[in-house]
Amino acid sequence: MRKLIPYIIPYSLRLTLIICSGSLCLTANAQFSSTNGWIEANVIRGCWPLTVELTHTGVRNSTLFYDFEGNPSDPNSLTGFTGSFNTGETVSFTYTSPQTAPYLIRVVDQTGSPGDRFDFLEVTVLDQVQPIVTVAACANNTVVLNFDLTTDPFDSFDIDFGDGTQTNFVKPTTADATFEHTYAASGNYPITVRGVFSNGDATNCSTNNLTVQTIQSIPVPNLTNITVTSETSLRFDYDALDPLLTYSLQIDDGSGYSNYTSIDPNANASSLEINDNSFDTNNLSYSFRIVATDLCELLEEISSEASSIALNYSLVDITNVFQVQFGWVIRPIGFTQATLFNNQNSLDQTSEPVSNNTYAFNSCVEIGTLYMESTINGIVSRSLELTPFQSQILTLPAPDAPIVELQGSSISISFTATNFPLGEIQISRTSTSNTFESIGTVTNFNAPFTDTSVPPGISEACYTITYTDQCGNLSERSDEVCIELSGNLNFPNAFSPNGDFVNDTFTAGPGVFNNYQLLIYNRWGQVVFQSTNPLDGWDGTISGQPAPPGTYLYKGSYTNADNLTIVRTGTVALIR
Image (cartoon, rainbow, N blue to C red; front, side, top):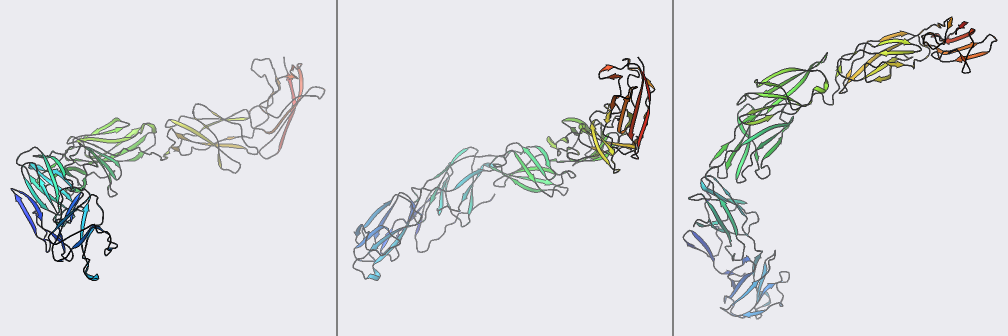
């Protein structure tokens, strides 16, 4: 137990009388002399209202005129005096308001020489201040009074502990001090602390009235949760702390426990978060406990200990499924089992404190927020929550090459199913500069894409595809597939527009024909049909009316890949 032994600070040329009754000591003061000794005051310091009794000492054997509120800026002024007194006489004055600077008492001998006419005495009048002190209970029914002496004006303190014990505690020279007292039995005690001036009257100063509930023992702190909140920070939850005790968080990083930080029971009553750039919570596990100590350092209690959980991940393979490896580290003391959660659902359980395992996910959306949790010595420990590959683009395997077919003057592109649930397929085609450029997307691999924008002047079109999954992961590019575009004009010799969907129109047949033109003539050389669209054949009508059966002339032309104009002419029989 720490004991502070009271001591008295001596005051030069002043007589101080200590009057004790039992263990209570009260301080009585002698008279305080002015600068020249012409007058004496009973007090020169106190809280308002402060009554000062001023006595003529006779050192100056003449009538003295007095001023209790002299002007320090003009101390030798001959105005402002309110009365006079002679040797042995006493006058009094009550100061009813405090002020920062001392009041100036002046006396003047009007018969004296100008250079030896005045005498002075200063009086300090304070507000009704009280001792700045708090009380804390320690084990074994001991209490500690904590004095903040930074701005405290008192010279000592009269203390009544409420159990019949009184004492005077003399102010030490340090900025703060403590005083301990041990009660004979547990209970709720009133404590009164009154300030004392060695050179004044503290009667009108305020007292500090405290109440303390003593304790025989201190409770064991209860750590409930350890949660990793980032790669360098952790949060601790615990039962509410007692503000009358001191607490420290201790850490064991493999070399034994040591104090890491103190815990303020007022600012961090039930939780504490720490951030330390030296931590590596993804790869290293640390053990923690809380230590409680009473203010007298007589007893300490230690909570149960638990370790943080380090959890990390890496991508193993992505050929057909997402294979992700999770590794964890847990200090083995008190550990029995841990559970790996994925989106709040149990993914796996392990009894290995240090290990790793690989898990397969059929799609990216199956990989949610993962964390590991374990109950160690009754304390719930949770790792950092990890969302693998969040804001990261993974490279998926290449899809199968698309299937390309010529359908009329367009190109149909179809797809096989992707490895993972589809986000969209991106289709690219070679441009005239032999580079791939995007020409469209589809979001359903069962829906073919039709390319109607093949540029002129090429003999073949080549295609490749990539795809993204539901999370935006992008695949590698598929193999390239090409189709010949140098088509031939395959006009039929006859057609029968009878609505049976068989040979109902006269067309050029499948192919990509640039600068295409078709003209149909009757026997008199009149144009009865013309078109620049190879898909737009003649349906056997003239001006919307069925043309008569018979033989008609046609002329078809287009530009091939070598920019040569190909022309074909002939006759076609219209049959009805």
